[in-house]
Image (cartoon, rainbow, N blue to C red):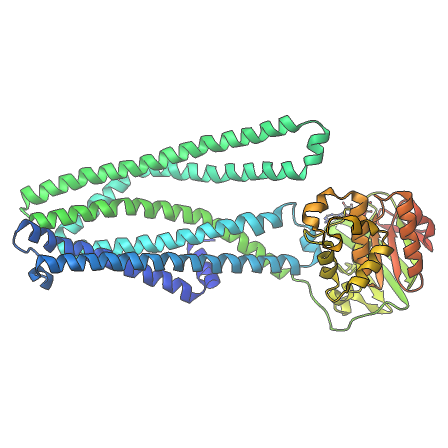
Length: 553
Ligand SMILES: Nc1ncnc2c1ncn2[C@@H]1O[C@H](COP(=O)(O)OP(=O)(O)OP(=O)(O)O)[C@@H](O)[C@H]1O
């Protein structure tokens, strides 16, 4: 995306009024600054007791009046600068929060096929890293507007003071920039390298947390620590080079500016015999403007870089929105007779079928154990029954109504899904329950905990109010599974899908859960992916999948 397109996106996301406020306040700050420089001429002349060189009305003011105006201008500029910073902050918040919420909606609202196909960390990178960079992009955008306005005002001020000298100053400034461009190019390259090194370090740090168990169990703590130290070393080396090179570029620009200003002063005084007040005001203006030109260029480069994060965030959000899940009709099916699959086929990726020709009828209120080797398609079939996604071929029907013809989200509200690696929110047990059943009361929660054999929750600090954000990590796999199961039972679903959901339980706990499931017999349909154990034994029938095809036992 071109930087200009990114600017349009910033304006669209932040709102025209907020952006206009940033521009207006930047212009106002710039005008007061420019006016201050113009005022410098009569002020210097008055201080030196010389003739007033400018033909402005101001030139006839007494020195006290000029100094008073000068102070007022500085005060206005300081006040406007505060407002300008606030306006940039408002714009940044509006853009970043707007983008983030849109991206969250896109990821959550996208169809399962798209979201489950995202590479690991892709959505995380979008929601966290890229959008943080967008924040930086908006700040740079504010800086660019400020610098452009300031340089515009300083140029006008220079033209007002002396058109000829101003034009000469523009020429010399351009020359300085051309001469120093190799240094700035190097700084830019290092800036890009720095971003890549940061990405690498973040990846290493994230990986260390995700793979903590693997790292520790293989005794590779020191090795991982060395990898991070290596990534840090690479980053710091580039960082140092970047700071050195950009500071040098800045220092050289200032030095060049000073040399050129000194030369300009000499030529103006000695060759053109210009009044001292004019020459000094112009020199001060030139010294002020030159680093701003350098900063403008550096910010423009930074903007081009940050705009690419904006591009990524927007295009991925757009893709998510394009893959938004079709909700279907309002009709909500209720499973009372049969959940049926007719000729169901599904491929996660082209040319690789996960399921083929699945014909299966599950009578409501019965329990089916789904077995088969790894990769046979069990989870895929469970996802289809849960209405997470629709089949590529054939149909899945609930009491004769195809899931493609009903509101799939409404169907999912009738389904409870418990996976092998239970995911509990970083909140209290109570809030975990309320998330799935907002109207639930304490009695229902107690009942669900009892049915899932999760009475241990009462002995946790705070009981139902125990914060799983802190305690979650301390719970065993089996304990987490039981809380997740209780959360599923809270819903009183039509269909429960258990994906190896009791794999971490001891025989006693599994037996207790089996007993709870037995009580649901005739009322709730259960699909349990289970290779062995109680759930498989107690199932009304066993369905075996092999290579995406069905064989019924
Ligand atoms: N999101 C995905 N993208 C691409 N391919 C996938 C995806 N999920 C599953 N698959 C592929 O689909 C096939 C069936 O996978 P599935 O997870 O349904 O098998 P499974 O029987 O549940 O396996 P396991 O017992 O190991 O969990 C496998 O070949 C798998 O690689």
